Length: 106
Image (cartoon, rainbow, N blue to C red; front, side, top):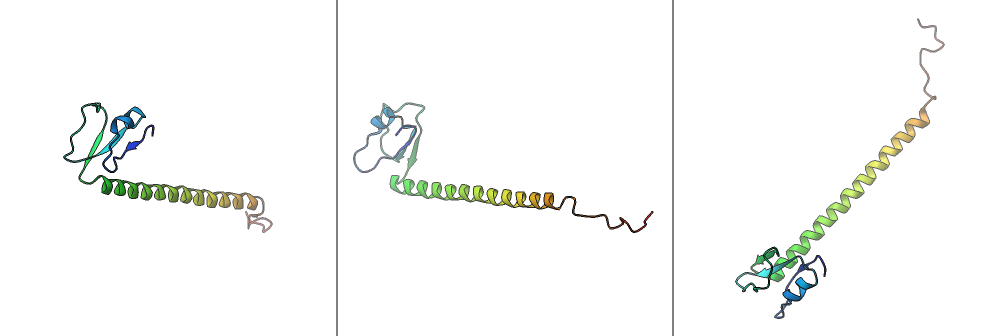
């Protein structure tokens, strides 16, 4: 996957192929030898348990995605309420009369 995170699963590790296809980083099991072909600028996130790190990363992504979705919905609700108030204000223009009109004030 181009511009993706490579996550080694099982016994077969295709890091070289993943880098060729455009992976931009990888999770990597602590204590496992890092292949010599890995470029210096290629980030390896060293973890105790690759599967656990993957699950944690996935949960964090879901939580952030849901939070962003709620923030967008909140902004939409607020903008709708704001538009409603502006509409009401415009519909009231000209209908509010000065209470002193016609009462012989100053």
